[in-house]
Length: 330
Image (tube, rainbow, N blue to C red; front, top):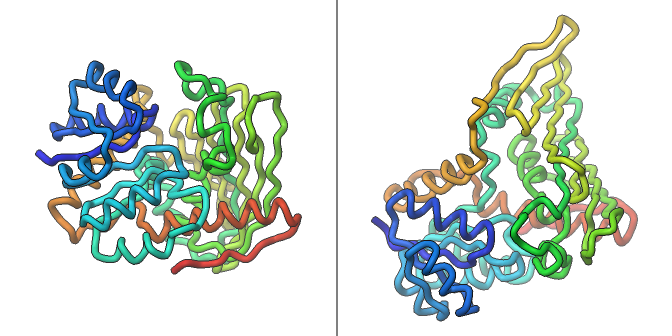
């Protein structure tokens, strides 16, 4: 049993609390608002603390699931105390203090929460893509979206950081999963062109429908579209190669390969597959790394920061209305 600190108790934070309890871990929750901490104690039966330094000193590892703009400062405080750190995506809403985060991460266990990398069908898709030389990958199209009002049914979206661009909200930052998958499958990105739009009547100060074109170091180009307005959930991936087309639908977990002879089902998850399995799988791996430091991360700090670099460049591209070269931290 490990002493695990969860920073933040919103929807994702509560999910991590439940999952850690199911693993038999000793959970401590930090949040500044004491009223919310009583609710956490009552609902989960865990210890709570409103003093971050005291909470860090009582813990072996830290799960950071606060608002995006607070991730880096908490991570730096934890890493200075030699704590292992799991940072929810995206790492931050800007590149401030990223160099310090990188330096502190060199001798510590750090994991970035991009749970889609653990999806069974996406893992098979990635394995297939890795067998193909980049010059035979013609391009890709990834899309993800859902109406923001349906994301967290028991929460007022207007009061959430998700609705505020200044705090790391908006469709692009919230749905950075697709950028992470593009990095995982096709490698680093050299250039991005982006159009970030506000199309709906949602009461938010952020983009709700955004389009990106990415160019990777190896020459592969792709399109990513994310939104917070789709009437129903959508998560689609299409990759075109010289011999076939791969199609993946996150709604049913089905992965297809198509060519001029027809189609073949490469993977399909069971009907009872729960989205929480992705979080459980990733957290289980992180906890294993506490005992075996030789284990590689599912998503490294390097990849997590590269996603952030692309997000920042995409915002710059939208403002300047031109493609922007990615400024690398590594």
